[in-house]
Length: 474
Image (tube, rainbow, N blue to C red; front, side, top):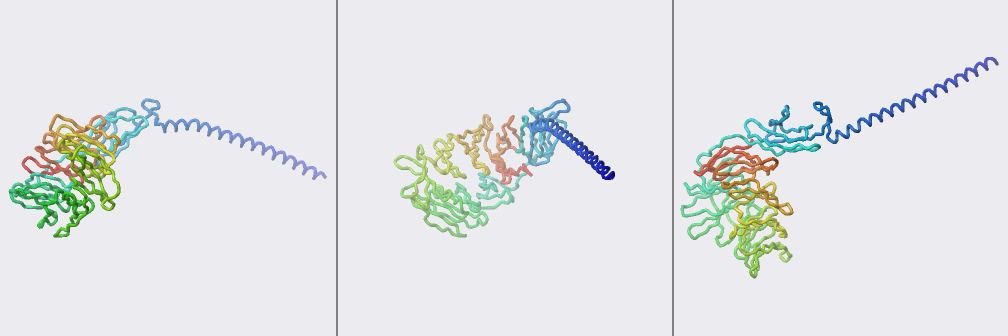
């Protein structure tokens, strides 16, 4: 019995001890949890404002011993690995560069590389924003190279800028000069009583349509630039001839009211009727397999279009002020109409429902090949650019002088223009921030210029008819 009482006592004490241990453990766990929870709350209260400030662009400025809000700057150039110097910063960078933690301010930036023109401009950096300068081009500092033994008159570039045709007055001959291979090819020899008129290239620039005139006789010659020895002659009865935009070996020729398809088959021409109008038309072009034409009825003039496969389908039309218009060209989705009496150009879309832009006394224009809505307008005193995709396009003046501008061409990228002013060669940047950078290139007595397709070389002629090459890009 004594043993039993002792056992029960021990068991009771053990139970009480276990209960006390459990209570202590429970109390410790609550305290630990409360402590951990409190730490998390403290961390949250400290970290959250820091994260909010960080995402808002704030950083702690050690020099100023306070929080500051910053902006960023991104600079890219062609060629890359150019030196970037920013006024007020001790550190320099190389392109492409992203520079963070900049105070809101205006920064004078210089990008340079040995052997190239430098780029310099003051740009603003705005808090919580990134300022971009991504279209910087550094042009090569090179000397012009004379192309030997070429005497050039009346140069005309190929549509793709891979070469040019020209007349050699010494030999009374028409030539093609390939600016990529720098090879010269004789296309046509003619007598001194013959004048060379229009020169039109086929879709892939393999065939050249040349109009010649000797006395009162007009000839239309088709020359294969790769095999120019045997030109093909097209009837002089046609009033108008234009190339197909779909096939390299097909032309369309018009008499008063009929359009004839002309197919080049090696050494002969195959003719067949393409479409016949019920009445005479004034002009035509074929675009996306539709015929755009000018028509005058009852003293009213229109530009219309028709689908040869569905001529009964109603199509839109635009009435013109008078009948003295021609269809100058169709570029992408834009039709260019010209009224020579007032040197007026009218630009309409190819759906014939919107007049995009119109200007009188326009001397020259040029579309950008890679951005077809961008239109360059220029005369001897002014260079302007207009974007035809805008709802109400307005021309932006890029450069203005009293006189002296003779030719302007687009650079390979639509951020620069190359132009001649007073027979000197210049490049202007289109970025309007601060001021547009104007770069002077070597070369004097410049008469005509042409940029190669890859944008690496400028070919130009001088007043003596000499052809020169100026490398501007690697």
